[in-house]
Amino acid sequence: MLGVFGFVQDGDREIGDGDRGVARRVHDEFVGTEAVAAGAGSLPPVPGDGAGPAFQRRYTIRIAGSPLTPEELITRLGDDLNAASPVEVAVFDKTAGAEGLVEVGDEYLVHMPGPWNCPVRVVDRTPVSFRFVTLRGHLEAGEIEFRAADAPDGLVFTIESWARSGDRLASALYSGLRVAKEMQLHMWTHFCERVAELAGGRMAGEIEVLTERADTRGTGPVTDALAAAAAKGFALAARLRGGRPLHPEGLVFDAELVLHGAPREWCVPFLDDRAVLHGKARLSRAAGTPDAFPDVLGLALRWPPDGGEGGAAGEGEAELLLATTGRGPLGRHLLRPSTRWAPGFYGSLLAYRAGDRRVLLGAAARGPRIRPAGLAGLARAADARPLLFDLLVATEFGPWERFGELRLTGPARTDARAPIRFDPERRPIPGLPPAGLLQRVRGPAYAAVQEVAQRRAGRGARPARPDPEPRRRPEKAPR
Image 1 (cartoon, rainbow, N blue to C red):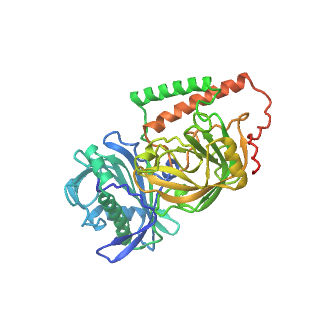
Image 2 (image 1 turned 30 degrees about the horizontal axis):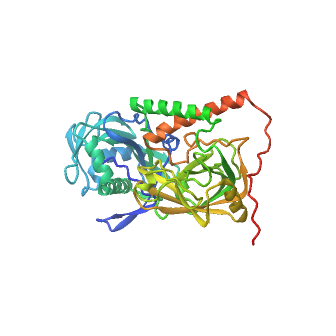
Image 3 (image 1 turned 90 degrees about the vertical axis):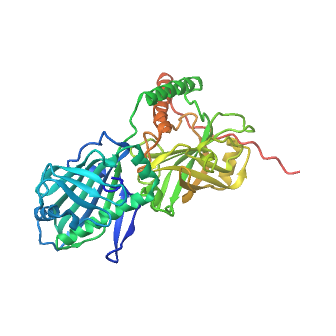
């Protein structure tokens, strides 16, 4: 319900309670499928009706000092849902079924401010839970479950929903109106607090809110056709260019990512946490044009999951691919050839999903000018001092926020004999899945290139030899 089921994601925060004069501490986190499913009830799959992305959300509180059993708490809640609902936001009006107990087949109309009245029906009832499904005319399509369970120190109460917007208009209203999201968070955190009061106990700790965005990437005729065309085109280019259609030559450096967290909460560890990660980076020219000519410059990063030294392909590694783009609201969506490595801006170009927001990642190279953008000059610059970049994140058209620093150190190495091949589709950053049509097309294209490279390696495999150091032009003696 643009109103009732709700999918807000704002990190740790305090939610004010106007009629009680208190604040509730809420921990709101976006997590992966495994984390949500581990404690979920028997919720249905993503609803087929509705429009826009589907979300699964779980609100959980622990109740200490309650004399009730889980069965007694659910019975008391079912007797009067309005005893827990913040009536200034939502009022449950039973339109079908006997007064009192919640039973399968009962129907309610949830009255909300504005034109947000939302019809629901009870579709499941157990001694410790009941579940509603939305009906026609509702602004969302999905289900929501209320359940209670025993815990070592009292009770655990959970509200879990799985829904998407009811139609395209509702989806647009939800995405564009922040007030709707705030209303949802206020409603269910308030509801949980009052359930603790109904139980005759007190909340122990904060309200936990976990969100999973369901995989809505899917495929279709257009996507499949574009992916197939991209895969064939990249495979042909790979065969013609020795296994690497783009960025044929580059230099590899040791990389250190010093993360300190963005100013705002993104609910993604990579963007929010403090950490130091070590891995590998590769700087390259996309077309391989002569040094004096502009070219799209690439910055590829790979680091292991534990942040230790690494770089070889392994389980759990993460990758990020950046290229020279503009930095402004429009320019960040366009590649920009450059004649210098630094200063400059490297952007992800394609979006990632951070909860219910699409974001772009970037790295701003700072320090002395490194021009022209040739490999030899780059190697000399890295020998002299570390190459420094500011790590940045932004929504697709919002301001950039700094969340860390990238340091690349020499000596520079080529990977001509043992190429480092990147595939962010197979090695995504935890909490930042690729988003959008072009990301879906990129995966098959990269897979096709990797297949060409593997076939070439199988036909002409030779014992690996150390890669040569990049050639450096001799320094001219001062006159």
